[in-house]
Structure formats: structure tokens, C-alpha cells
Length: 301
Image 1 (tube, one colour):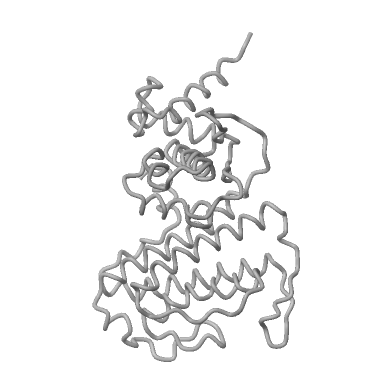
Image 2 (cartoon, one colour; image 1 turned 90 degrees about the vertical axis):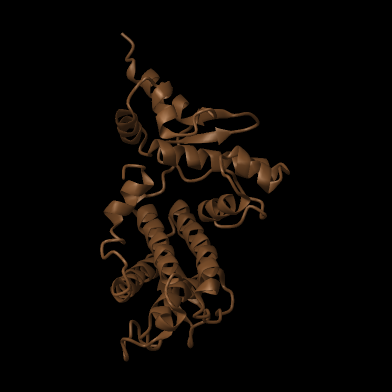
């Protein structure tokens, strides 16, 4: 007797990926189930929430369309975005570069092998090497939380951001004092910039300005590059590789995994320092909880 479960899963996936279903309610309605049951079943069976899967696959299709010469605004609208700006931010976070730069490939890391397959809106399922979900979650939570902290700080009086409230505060030897909110946030971004330069073999970048109007877009660009870099390490299985950082004086050898762990460790420390400093200005203390972040990503909040 044939097991009906795979067919039912395919029905659920079809509901997720149908272009007419722009919301979770529409997906659930097409599958003749409740919103809660639909989201829970798809997430459990596919390892990805319906909303996240649809967003990822639509971005894959957009990347393929852009490579074929489709204007950015047309690809944005087709992917369900109301503006080119919002689409560009989402695309850069996913692929590690803006949509104006052609993607080397249009598939993104997937926990289930469901991807866009050109030339038409055909959805296929293939076996593939999965990106470690813990690695993905750690990196994405780190960059998202940093962006949220910068966005909240941008609502404050600029004088408060540069006011030294914790004189002598040092996170890492050689990084200087980080006594103001602006200092901590700037070094959050700068740390990724420095290690990206080491991985890419480019010159040491200049320290970013303390102006959050400059820091926010810089953080978005750096975060996209950093996420793409770590994903590439995971795909290549290069965690145990060593590289020589010629930017050090003298040049120094590092194990790749230790560098990523270093960045995550001190980024988490700086984020909590910044959060503690921003709580005095009204930021919710638990705003950086990765449990709440993941629920929001899965549309469960």
C-alpha cells in the first residue's frame, strides 16, 4: 500500500510556492488546513518555515532572472517586494552582494533541497549537502542583532551616542577603549571588516565613522559579505584549514574555525555591552534573545 504522506507533503509545498499565495493564510487555505497546523507541519517536515522557504525560493528565481537581464525593479516586484530598496537589502543579505552584481549561482543554502529551477516556475527537489543549521543561525542572529542595535541607537540624540559613559572599557587588547555606545557599535562592524580583509587578502580597512547614518549601510554590506564568507567555508568543509594573515606584524597563522569563533565570541560580548548601554535609553533587555529571533524568522511569533 502506498504511503500517502509524501504526496501530502508535496501538496503543502505546492501551497507554499504557488505564486498566488502571498500570505501564510493563503497558503494554509489552499492546503485546506489551519494556519497553525500548516506552519507547524511544513516546518517539521521540510526543516524550514513556509514563509522562509517562499522568500528563499523567490530570491533564487530573482537571481536567475537578474542573470538573464531582467531589471532589478521587475525582479523585485515578481519576488513580492514593494520596493527595489527592500528587495536589494534582502538580496544582499542572502547572496552576499547587491542585485546589481550577477550571482555566480542562483541557489541558496537549503535544509530540504527545494529550489527554483529555470526556465519556468518549476520547483524541484534534489539531494544536496546541507549547511550546518547551527552555524547559519549563529551568524545570521549575530548580524541581525547588530543591525537592530544600530537601528535603535540611530533614534537617540547623537550627543548621547558619543558620550563616554564607561571610561576605560576595553574588549580586546589593541582595539582601544570602547567607552561610548558609538565606540562599541563601530567596533562590532570593524571586527568583521578586519577579518574579511584577512580572508580575502586585502588591505586593512580604515575604522568606520561613529556617524550611524554611515555605519548602518556599512554594517549591512559587511554583514552580507561575512555571511557569504562563512557559508563558503561551510560548503568547502574548510573549518580546519589554516591561513596566514600577512596583515599581521609579523604574519601569523590562524585556523579558520578559530577565527569565526573569535568573531562570534567578541561580537556577542560587544552586543551585550551595547544592549546594556542602550537599556538606559529604553531598549528592551531581552531584545537579543536568539530564541525570540528564531521564532520571528519562522513566523511563529
